[in-house]
Image 1 (cartoon, rainbow, N blue to C red):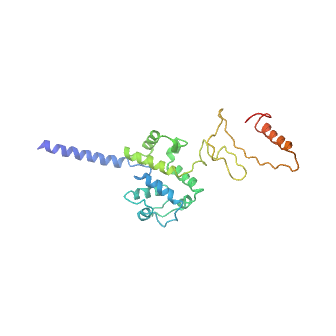
Image 2 (image 1 turned 30 degrees about the vertical axis):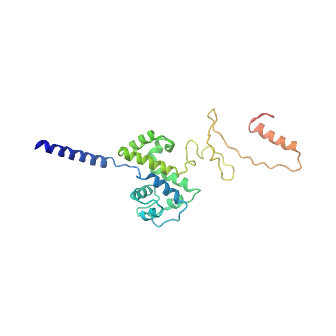
Image 3 (image 1 turned 90 degrees about the vertical axis):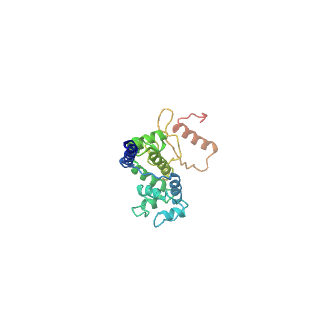
Length: 235
């Protein structure tokens, strides 16, 4: 009799332990069980009208419904794109703009995932092993839950523009050309000696009634005095 009851008692203990583990390691950072659907929902924000609410019905209309819809909404709330009533906030409206929206989303990501950015300049560029360690330390959760947190973070970051705030290569150290534009497309930020690479845009007003040789002399002077090149030296 005693031996028959022992397996039940041990099973109850294991169940209690699992319950304690789930509640004791509740993740601090948001996640969805459908990161692919989250990625698609963020992509559609730019082309859709501002909805009165983002709910299961709306996500179904966007072909993103199903049992995972609530977890997508949970992430949008954590980012501040939705309020507690699932209504779009000013951050949602800002993200709707294709040009500036991704940068505004990046600001929200930096705030929500602050522990990750405190540890790394660009955590969204780190590998899964590094991210798993970061989420394990700063968020917690079971192994599968941490995987969802990593996938959620990556899905969000794919729609965010961090170039205006990167410590090692954003707007810092770039030269404005006078028209409000900067060299955001450059990947190389330093030369072989570790010195910062500066992008220069020259606006030259050439004098009239000059010969071709006069113009060549102007460009030779620019090459010599600004770029340090000698006449005839290849680039």
